Length: 516
Image: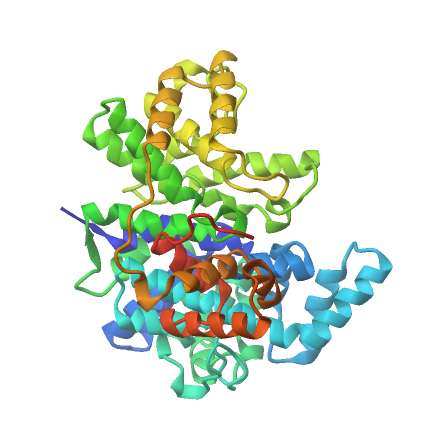
Protein backbone atom coordinates (compact mmCIF):
# COMPACT_ATOMS: atom_id res chain seq x y z
CA UNK A 1 0.00 0.00 0.00
CA UNK A 2 1.28 3.48 -0.83
CA UNK A 3 0.64 6.96 0.57
CA UNK A 4 0.55 10.22 -1.40
CA UNK A 5 3.42 12.37 -0.27
CA UNK A 6 1.50 15.58 -1.02
CA UNK A 7 -1.25 14.43 1.35
CA UNK A 8 1.26 14.01 4.17
CA UNK A 9 2.88 17.36 3.44
CA UNK A 10 -0.37 19.32 3.45
CA UNK A 11 -0.26 18.86 7.21
CA UNK A 12 3.46 18.62 7.89
CA UNK A 13 4.13 21.83 5.94
CA UNK A 14 2.65 23.60 8.96
CA UNK A 15 5.98 22.93 10.67
CA UNK A 16 7.58 25.38 8.24
CA UNK A 17 4.85 27.96 8.80
CA UNK A 18 4.97 27.85 12.59
CA UNK A 19 8.76 27.60 12.65
CA UNK A 20 9.00 30.80 10.63
CA UNK A 21 6.33 32.72 12.51
CA UNK A 22 3.56 32.49 9.92
CA UNK A 23 -0.01 31.35 10.36
CA UNK A 24 -0.44 27.61 9.93
CA UNK A 25 -1.49 26.92 6.35
CA UNK A 26 0.39 29.76 4.60
CA UNK A 27 2.72 27.36 2.76
CA UNK A 28 -0.25 25.29 1.66
CA UNK A 29 -1.91 28.40 0.20
CA UNK A 30 1.34 29.38 -1.50
CA UNK A 31 1.61 25.90 -3.00
CA UNK A 32 -1.97 26.06 -4.25
CA UNK A 33 -1.37 29.49 -5.81
CA UNK A 34 1.83 28.21 -7.44
CA UNK A 35 -0.12 25.36 -9.03
CA UNK A 36 -2.90 27.66 -10.26
CA UNK A 37 -0.44 30.30 -11.52
CA UNK A 38 1.70 27.65 -13.19
CA UNK A 39 -1.32 26.31 -15.05
CA UNK A 40 -2.24 29.80 -16.23
CA UNK A 41 1.29 30.10 -17.65
CA UNK A 42 1.04 26.72 -19.41
CA UNK A 43 4.18 25.53 -17.67
CA UNK A 44 5.30 21.91 -18.12
CA UNK A 45 4.06 19.42 -15.54
CA UNK A 46 7.55 18.96 -14.05
CA UNK A 47 7.80 22.70 -13.33
CA UNK A 48 4.32 22.81 -11.80
CA UNK A 49 5.16 19.84 -9.60
CA UNK A 50 8.43 21.44 -8.51
CA UNK A 51 6.73 24.78 -7.78
CA UNK A 52 3.97 23.09 -5.81
CA UNK A 53 6.38 21.13 -3.58
CA UNK A 54 8.72 24.12 -3.26
CA UNK A 55 5.77 26.13 -1.98
CA UNK A 56 4.88 23.42 0.54
CA UNK A 57 8.44 23.13 1.83
CA UNK A 58 9.54 26.75 1.33
CA UNK A 59 10.02 27.46 5.03
CA UNK A 60 10.90 24.05 6.54
CA UNK A 61 14.61 24.89 6.47
CA UNK A 62 14.18 28.11 8.45
CA UNK A 63 14.66 26.25 11.75
CA UNK A 64 18.22 25.66 10.59
CA UNK A 65 19.21 29.23 11.51
CA UNK A 66 16.89 29.81 14.46
CA UNK A 67 19.72 29.31 16.95
CA UNK A 68 21.97 31.88 15.27
CA UNK A 69 19.12 34.35 14.73
CA UNK A 70 18.10 34.20 18.38
CA UNK A 71 21.67 34.74 19.55
CA UNK A 72 22.13 37.86 17.42
CA UNK A 73 18.69 39.48 17.40
CA UNK A 74 16.50 37.75 19.98
CA UNK A 75 13.07 36.40 19.03
CA UNK A 76 13.61 34.86 15.58
CA UNK A 77 9.93 35.18 14.66
CA UNK A 78 10.14 38.98 14.84
CA UNK A 79 13.17 39.01 12.55
CA UNK A 80 11.68 36.47 10.14
CA UNK A 81 8.40 38.30 9.73
CA UNK A 82 10.10 41.69 9.34
CA UNK A 83 12.32 40.26 6.61
CA UNK A 84 9.38 38.53 4.94
CA UNK A 85 7.49 41.82 4.71
CA UNK A 86 10.51 43.81 3.53
CA UNK A 87 11.58 44.38 -0.06
CA UNK A 88 15.08 43.11 0.67
CA UNK A 89 16.42 44.36 -2.66
CA UNK A 90 15.67 47.95 -1.59
CA UNK A 91 17.98 49.20 1.23
CA UNK A 92 15.53 51.96 2.12
CA UNK A 93 12.75 49.46 2.64
CA UNK A 94 15.04 47.27 4.75
CA UNK A 95 15.86 50.24 6.98
CA UNK A 96 12.18 51.14 7.26
CA UNK A 97 10.96 47.63 8.15
CA UNK A 98 13.63 45.43 9.71
CA UNK A 99 15.40 48.00 11.89
CA UNK A 100 12.21 49.17 13.69
CA UNK A 101 11.09 45.56 14.17
CA UNK A 102 14.28 44.28 15.79
CA UNK A 103 14.77 47.36 17.99
CA UNK A 104 11.19 47.81 19.21
CA UNK A 105 10.83 47.59 22.98
CA UNK A 106 14.58 47.24 23.65
CA UNK A 107 16.65 49.37 26.06
CA UNK A 108 18.28 52.40 24.37
CA UNK A 109 21.83 51.00 24.14
CA UNK A 110 20.60 47.63 22.87
CA UNK A 111 18.44 49.41 20.27
CA UNK A 112 21.50 51.19 18.91
CA UNK A 113 23.50 47.95 18.84
CA UNK A 114 20.76 46.08 16.97
CA UNK A 115 20.23 48.92 14.51
CA UNK A 116 23.94 49.02 13.69
CA UNK A 117 24.07 45.23 13.37
CA UNK A 118 21.07 45.23 11.04
CA UNK A 119 22.51 47.91 8.77
CA UNK A 120 26.14 46.75 8.70
CA UNK A 121 25.83 42.97 8.94
CA UNK A 122 22.28 42.42 7.77
CA UNK A 123 23.05 41.38 4.19
CA UNK A 124 25.81 38.98 5.24
CA UNK A 125 23.61 37.56 7.98
CA UNK A 126 20.72 37.14 5.53
CA UNK A 127 22.95 35.27 3.08
CA UNK A 128 24.08 32.87 5.80
CA UNK A 129 20.46 32.42 6.91
CA UNK A 130 19.27 31.67 3.37
CA UNK A 131 22.15 29.28 2.70
CA UNK A 132 21.41 27.26 5.83
CA UNK A 133 17.67 27.29 5.15
CA UNK A 134 18.07 26.22 1.52
CA UNK A 135 20.56 23.48 2.35
CA UNK A 136 18.30 22.07 5.04
CA UNK A 137 15.25 22.31 2.77
CA UNK A 138 17.05 20.54 -0.08
CA UNK A 139 18.22 17.81 2.30
CA UNK A 140 14.67 17.32 3.57
CA UNK A 141 13.40 17.03 -0.01
CA UNK A 142 16.06 14.44 -0.80
CA UNK A 143 15.17 12.35 2.22
CA UNK A 144 11.48 12.61 1.37
CA UNK A 145 12.26 11.06 -2.02
CA UNK A 146 11.22 14.07 -4.10
CA UNK A 147 12.58 14.40 -7.67
CA UNK A 148 15.87 16.15 -8.39
CA UNK A 149 13.98 19.06 -9.95
CA UNK A 150 12.18 19.72 -6.68
CA UNK A 151 15.40 19.52 -4.69
CA UNK A 152 17.09 21.94 -7.11
CA UNK A 153 14.19 24.38 -6.90
CA UNK A 154 14.11 24.36 -3.10
CA UNK A 155 17.86 24.93 -2.93
CA UNK A 156 17.52 28.04 -5.12
CA UNK A 157 14.25 29.32 -3.62
CA UNK A 158 15.95 32.36 -2.01
CA UNK A 159 17.63 33.58 -5.21
CA UNK A 160 16.60 37.01 -6.56
CA UNK A 161 15.97 37.97 -10.15
CA UNK A 162 18.68 40.66 -9.94
CA UNK A 163 21.30 38.21 -8.63
CA UNK A 164 21.37 39.59 -5.10
CA UNK A 165 19.96 36.50 -3.40
CA UNK A 166 21.45 33.31 -2.00
CA UNK A 167 22.86 30.70 -1.83
CA UNK A 168 24.45 30.81 -5.30
CA UNK A 169 23.74 34.38 -6.44
CA UNK A 170 21.92 33.16 -9.55
CA UNK A 171 20.12 35.78 -11.63
CA UNK A 172 17.33 35.94 -14.19
CA UNK A 173 16.37 32.77 -15.99
CA UNK A 174 19.31 30.88 -14.48
CA UNK A 175 17.03 30.53 -11.45
CA UNK A 176 14.69 27.53 -11.82
CA UNK A 177 11.25 28.75 -12.84
CA UNK A 178 9.68 26.75 -10.00
CA UNK A 179 11.83 28.63 -7.49
CA UNK A 180 10.89 31.97 -9.07
CA UNK A 181 7.24 31.00 -8.91
CA UNK A 182 7.42 29.94 -5.26
CA UNK A 183 9.17 33.18 -4.32
CA UNK A 184 6.34 35.19 -5.90
CA UNK A 185 3.47 33.15 -4.48
CA UNK A 186 4.90 33.24 -0.96
CA UNK A 187 4.97 37.05 -1.09
CA UNK A 188 1.51 37.25 -2.65
CA UNK A 189 -0.12 34.97 -0.09
CA UNK A 190 1.49 36.78 2.85
CA UNK A 191 0.35 40.22 1.72
CA UNK A 192 -3.08 38.91 0.73
CA UNK A 193 -3.43 37.73 4.34
CA UNK A 194 -2.27 41.11 5.65
CA UNK A 195 -4.19 43.46 3.39
CA UNK A 196 -6.06 41.62 0.66
CA UNK A 197 -5.57 41.49 -3.11
CA UNK A 198 -4.48 45.13 -3.45
CA UNK A 199 -1.70 44.64 -0.91
CA UNK A 200 -0.57 41.46 -2.67
CA UNK A 201 -0.48 43.18 -6.07
CA UNK A 202 1.46 46.15 -4.70
CA UNK A 203 4.00 43.93 -2.91
CA UNK A 204 4.66 41.76 -5.97
CA UNK A 205 4.83 44.75 -8.31
CA UNK A 206 7.36 46.58 -6.11
CA UNK A 207 9.60 43.51 -6.00
CA UNK A 208 9.46 42.89 -9.76
CA UNK A 209 12.91 43.07 -11.31
CA UNK A 210 14.56 42.92 -7.89
CA UNK A 211 13.62 39.90 -5.84
CA UNK A 212 10.92 38.68 -8.22
CA UNK A 213 10.87 37.71 -11.90
CA UNK A 214 9.31 40.81 -13.56
CA UNK A 215 7.57 38.72 -16.24
CA UNK A 216 5.91 36.49 -13.64
CA UNK A 217 5.07 39.61 -11.61
CA UNK A 218 3.34 41.22 -14.58
CA UNK A 219 1.41 38.04 -15.34
CA UNK A 220 0.29 37.68 -11.73
CA UNK A 221 -0.68 41.30 -11.09
CA UNK A 222 -2.93 41.31 -14.14
CA UNK A 223 -4.85 38.28 -12.84
CA UNK A 224 -4.36 38.53 -9.08
CA UNK A 225 -8.02 38.88 -8.12
CA UNK A 226 -9.04 35.76 -10.05
CA UNK A 227 -6.03 33.69 -8.98
CA UNK A 228 -6.22 34.57 -5.29
CA UNK A 229 -9.99 34.33 -5.42
CA UNK A 230 -9.74 30.72 -6.57
CA UNK A 231 -7.26 29.84 -3.83
CA UNK A 232 -9.29 31.59 -1.12
CA UNK A 233 -12.63 30.18 -2.24
CA UNK A 234 -11.43 26.58 -2.22
CA UNK A 235 -9.83 24.42 0.44
CA UNK A 236 -6.16 24.85 -0.59
CA UNK A 237 -5.50 21.27 0.49
CA UNK A 238 -7.98 19.97 -2.07
CA UNK A 239 -6.59 22.36 -4.67
CA UNK A 240 -3.03 21.09 -4.17
CA UNK A 241 -4.04 17.44 -4.29
CA UNK A 242 -6.11 18.00 -7.43
CA UNK A 243 -3.44 20.09 -9.14
CA UNK A 244 -0.49 17.73 -8.67
CA UNK A 245 0.49 16.47 -12.13
CA UNK A 246 0.56 12.76 -12.68
CA UNK A 247 2.06 10.43 -11.88
CA UNK A 248 1.67 11.70 -8.32
CA UNK A 249 4.55 11.20 -5.89
CA UNK A 250 3.74 8.28 -3.60
CA UNK A 251 5.73 6.42 -0.96
CA UNK A 252 5.25 2.88 0.39
CA UNK A 253 3.40 2.89 3.70
CA UNK A 254 6.41 1.37 5.43
CA UNK A 255 8.37 4.53 4.58
CA UNK A 256 6.12 6.57 6.87
CA UNK A 257 8.78 6.13 9.56
CA UNK A 258 11.36 7.71 7.25
CA UNK A 259 9.06 10.64 6.47
CA UNK A 260 8.36 11.14 10.17
CA UNK A 261 12.10 11.00 10.85
CA UNK A 262 12.72 13.91 8.48
CA UNK A 263 10.26 16.16 10.30
CA UNK A 264 11.38 14.96 13.72
CA UNK A 265 14.93 15.96 12.80
CA UNK A 266 13.71 19.34 11.54
CA UNK A 267 11.94 19.99 14.84
CA UNK A 268 15.02 18.94 16.82
CA UNK A 269 17.14 21.30 14.70
CA UNK A 270 15.41 24.23 16.43
CA UNK A 271 18.16 24.32 19.06
CA UNK A 272 21.37 22.30 19.51
CA UNK A 273 20.04 21.19 22.90
CA UNK A 274 17.46 18.93 21.26
CA UNK A 275 19.44 17.40 18.39
CA UNK A 276 18.53 13.72 18.14
CA UNK A 277 15.85 13.91 20.86
CA UNK A 278 12.93 12.64 18.79
CA UNK A 279 14.84 9.70 17.31
CA UNK A 280 15.83 8.52 20.77
CA UNK A 281 12.28 8.93 22.10
CA UNK A 282 10.95 6.91 19.16
CA UNK A 283 13.48 4.12 19.73
CA UNK A 284 12.66 3.93 23.44
CA UNK A 285 8.90 4.01 22.82
CA UNK A 286 9.08 1.29 20.19
CA UNK A 287 11.20 -1.01 22.35
CA UNK A 288 9.01 -0.38 25.39
CA UNK A 289 5.86 -1.10 23.39
CA UNK A 290 7.31 -4.39 22.24
CA UNK A 291 8.30 -5.20 25.82
CA UNK A 292 4.69 -4.63 26.89
CA UNK A 293 3.46 -6.94 24.10
CA UNK A 294 1.49 -4.21 22.39
CA UNK A 295 0.21 -5.13 18.93
CA UNK A 296 2.45 -4.54 15.91
CA UNK A 297 0.26 -1.70 14.63
CA UNK A 298 0.33 0.03 18.01
CA UNK A 299 4.11 -0.35 18.21
CA UNK A 300 4.47 1.10 14.71
CA UNK A 301 2.23 4.02 15.70
CA UNK A 302 4.34 4.59 18.81
CA UNK A 303 7.50 4.86 16.72
CA UNK A 304 5.96 7.38 14.31
CA UNK A 305 4.44 9.34 17.20
CA UNK A 306 7.82 9.38 18.94
CA UNK A 307 9.43 10.87 15.87
CA UNK A 308 6.73 13.53 15.49
CA UNK A 309 5.78 14.27 19.10
CA UNK A 310 7.78 17.51 19.28
CA UNK A 311 7.11 19.03 15.84
CA UNK A 312 5.12 21.73 17.64
CA UNK A 313 8.33 22.80 19.37
CA UNK A 314 9.07 24.99 16.35
CA UNK A 315 6.14 27.30 17.25
CA UNK A 316 8.00 28.47 20.38
CA UNK A 317 10.87 30.94 20.04
CA UNK A 318 14.39 29.61 20.39
CA UNK A 319 15.02 32.38 22.91
CA UNK A 320 12.71 30.48 25.26
CA UNK A 321 14.17 27.01 24.60
CA UNK A 322 17.68 28.39 25.15
CA UNK A 323 16.91 30.57 28.17
CA UNK A 324 19.24 29.56 31.02
CA UNK A 325 17.04 31.10 33.72
CA UNK A 326 13.58 30.40 35.10
CA UNK A 327 10.81 30.98 32.54
CA UNK A 328 8.22 33.69 33.08
CA UNK A 329 4.56 32.72 33.31
CA UNK A 330 4.03 33.86 29.72
CA UNK A 331 7.03 31.87 28.46
CA UNK A 332 5.93 28.76 30.34
CA UNK A 333 2.49 29.03 28.77
CA UNK A 334 4.08 29.07 25.32
CA UNK A 335 6.09 25.96 26.18
CA UNK A 336 2.95 24.19 27.37
CA UNK A 337 1.31 24.90 24.02
CA UNK A 338 3.94 23.07 21.98
CA UNK A 339 2.13 19.76 22.50
CA UNK A 340 -1.04 21.38 21.15
CA UNK A 341 0.83 22.62 18.09
CA UNK A 342 2.20 19.12 17.48
CA UNK A 343 -1.33 17.76 17.54
CA UNK A 344 -2.57 20.42 15.13
CA UNK A 345 0.28 19.81 12.67
CA UNK A 346 -0.56 16.11 12.44
CA UNK A 347 -4.29 16.76 12.20
CA UNK A 348 -3.72 18.46 8.83
CA UNK A 349 -3.03 15.13 7.14
CA UNK A 350 -5.61 12.35 6.81
CA UNK A 351 -2.86 9.76 7.10
CA UNK A 352 -1.41 11.22 10.30
CA UNK A 353 -4.60 12.54 11.94
CA UNK A 354 -5.23 9.25 13.82
CA UNK A 355 -1.93 9.83 15.66
CA UNK A 356 -2.61 13.49 16.47
CA UNK A 357 -4.25 12.82 19.84
CA UNK A 358 -1.44 10.45 20.89
CA UNK A 359 1.21 13.02 19.97
CA UNK A 360 -0.70 15.73 21.83
CA UNK A 361 -0.63 13.73 25.08
CA UNK A 362 3.12 13.31 25.46
CA UNK A 363 3.23 15.68 28.45
CA UNK A 364 0.07 14.41 30.13
CA UNK A 365 0.29 12.74 33.54
CA UNK A 366 -1.89 10.11 35.18
CA UNK A 367 -2.87 12.43 38.04
CA UNK A 368 -4.14 15.15 35.70
CA UNK A 369 -1.19 17.48 36.34
CA UNK A 370 0.15 17.36 32.78
CA UNK A 371 -0.55 19.46 29.72
CA UNK A 372 -1.97 20.63 27.36
CA UNK A 373 -5.37 19.16 28.31
CA UNK A 374 -4.76 17.99 31.87
CA UNK A 375 -6.03 14.49 31.04
CA UNK A 376 -7.02 12.04 33.76
CA UNK A 377 -5.54 8.54 33.80
CA UNK A 378 -8.71 7.06 32.29
CA UNK A 379 -8.13 9.18 29.18
CA UNK A 380 -4.59 7.93 28.60
CA UNK A 381 -3.99 4.79 26.56
CA UNK A 382 -0.99 2.59 27.29
CA UNK A 383 0.67 3.99 24.16
CA UNK A 384 0.20 7.53 25.52
CA UNK A 385 1.68 6.50 28.88
CA UNK A 386 4.70 4.92 27.20
CA UNK A 387 5.30 7.96 24.98
CA UNK A 388 5.15 10.29 27.99
CA UNK A 389 7.73 8.21 29.88
CA UNK A 390 10.03 7.84 26.86
CA UNK A 391 9.97 11.61 26.34
CA UNK A 392 10.58 12.33 30.02
CA UNK A 393 13.49 9.90 30.30
CA UNK A 394 15.24 11.07 27.15
CA UNK A 395 14.78 14.76 28.00
CA UNK A 396 16.20 14.26 31.49
CA UNK A 397 19.31 12.52 30.13
CA UNK A 398 19.95 15.22 27.52
CA UNK A 399 21.48 18.60 28.37
CA UNK A 400 19.20 21.62 28.34
CA UNK A 401 19.97 25.33 28.51
CA UNK A 402 18.91 25.58 32.15
CA UNK A 403 20.48 22.34 33.46
CA UNK A 404 23.05 19.64 32.71
CA UNK A 405 22.02 16.17 31.60
CA UNK A 406 21.07 13.78 34.39
CA UNK A 407 22.89 10.49 34.74
CA UNK A 408 20.72 7.49 33.77
CA UNK A 409 20.50 6.45 37.43
CA UNK A 410 19.23 9.90 38.41
CA UNK A 411 16.65 9.86 35.63
CA UNK A 412 15.51 6.41 36.72
CA UNK A 413 14.97 7.64 40.28
CA UNK A 414 12.98 10.64 39.04
CA UNK A 415 10.72 8.32 37.05
CA UNK A 416 10.22 6.01 40.02
CA UNK A 417 9.37 9.03 42.19
CA UNK A 418 6.75 10.02 39.60
CA UNK A 419 5.27 6.52 39.76
CA UNK A 420 5.09 6.78 43.55
CA UNK A 421 3.42 10.17 43.19
CA UNK A 422 0.81 8.82 40.78
CA UNK A 423 2.05 10.88 37.86
CA UNK A 424 3.45 8.14 35.62
CA UNK A 425 2.30 4.60 34.89
CA UNK A 426 4.37 1.91 36.64
CA UNK A 427 4.28 -0.57 33.75
CA UNK A 428 5.23 2.11 31.22
CA UNK A 429 8.14 3.25 33.39
CA UNK A 430 9.38 -0.32 33.84
CA UNK A 431 9.19 -0.94 30.09
CA UNK A 432 11.03 2.27 29.15
CA UNK A 433 13.73 1.69 31.75
CA UNK A 434 14.22 -1.84 30.44
CA UNK A 435 14.50 -0.47 26.92
CA UNK A 436 16.99 2.18 28.02
CA UNK A 437 19.05 -0.29 30.02
CA UNK A 438 19.46 -2.71 27.15
CA UNK A 439 20.11 -0.16 24.41
CA UNK A 440 23.70 -0.14 23.24
CA UNK A 441 25.32 1.96 20.55
CA UNK A 442 25.39 0.21 17.21
CA UNK A 443 28.82 -0.87 16.00
CA UNK A 444 29.59 1.12 12.90
CA UNK A 445 31.78 -0.80 10.46
CA UNK A 446 32.05 2.21 8.20
CA UNK A 447 31.35 5.86 8.90
CA UNK A 448 29.28 7.76 6.31
CA UNK A 449 30.80 9.99 3.63
CA UNK A 450 34.30 8.73 4.39
CA UNK A 451 34.44 10.55 7.74
CA UNK A 452 37.16 9.62 10.20
CA UNK A 453 36.55 9.13 13.93
CA UNK A 454 38.20 12.49 14.62
CA UNK A 455 36.00 14.18 12.04
CA UNK A 456 32.93 12.71 13.73
CA UNK A 457 34.12 14.27 17.00
CA UNK A 458 34.45 17.62 15.24
CA UNK A 459 31.08 17.20 13.50
CA UNK A 460 29.35 16.72 16.85
CA UNK A 461 30.84 19.98 18.10
CA UNK A 462 29.91 21.83 14.90
CA UNK A 463 26.33 20.55 15.18
CA UNK A 464 26.25 21.73 18.77
CA UNK A 465 27.05 25.29 17.70
CA UNK A 466 30.73 25.41 18.69
CA UNK A 467 32.98 27.92 16.94
CA UNK A 468 36.32 26.87 15.47
CA UNK A 469 38.03 28.40 18.48
CA UNK A 470 35.84 26.42 20.87
CA UNK A 471 36.42 23.19 18.89
CA UNK A 472 40.17 23.74 19.14
CA UNK A 473 39.91 24.22 22.91
CA UNK A 474 37.70 21.16 23.44
CA UNK A 475 39.92 18.84 21.38
CA UNK A 476 43.26 20.38 22.40
CA UNK A 477 44.23 21.16 18.81
CA UNK A 478 45.20 24.36 17.06
CA UNK A 479 42.51 26.63 15.68
CA UNK A 480 43.97 26.16 12.20
CA UNK A 481 43.67 22.38 12.55
CA UNK A 482 40.08 22.78 13.72
CA UNK A 483 39.28 24.94 10.68
CA UNK A 484 40.90 22.33 8.42
CA UNK A 485 38.76 19.56 9.94
CA UNK A 486 35.56 21.62 9.60
CA UNK A 487 36.19 22.42 5.94
CA UNK A 488 37.03 18.78 5.15
CA UNK A 489 33.82 17.69 6.86
CA UNK A 490 31.73 20.21 4.92
CA UNK A 491 33.34 19.04 1.68
CA UNK A 492 32.75 15.36 2.45
CA UNK A 493 29.10 15.73 3.43
CA UNK A 494 28.28 18.34 0.78
CA UNK A 495 27.13 21.21 3.01
CA UNK A 496 28.39 24.60 4.11
CA UNK A 497 26.24 25.39 7.17
CA UNK A 498 26.00 24.20 10.76
CA UNK A 499 22.32 23.42 10.34
CA UNK A 500 22.80 21.12 7.36
CA UNK A 501 25.71 19.43 9.14
CA UNK A 502 23.47 18.82 12.15
CA UNK A 503 20.77 17.32 9.91
CA UNK A 504 23.41 14.99 8.41
CA UNK A 505 24.60 13.96 11.87
CA UNK A 506 21.05 13.21 13.03
CA UNK A 507 20.21 11.28 9.88
CA UNK A 508 23.28 9.06 10.33
CA UNK A 509 23.00 8.71 14.13
CA UNK A 510 26.33 10.39 14.85
CA UNK A 511 25.32 12.48 17.86
CA UNK A 512 26.08 10.01 20.66
CA UNK A 513 27.89 12.00 23.31
CA UNK A 514 27.33 15.31 21.50
CA UNK A 515 28.93 18.28 23.22
CA UNK A 516 28.08 21.97 23.17
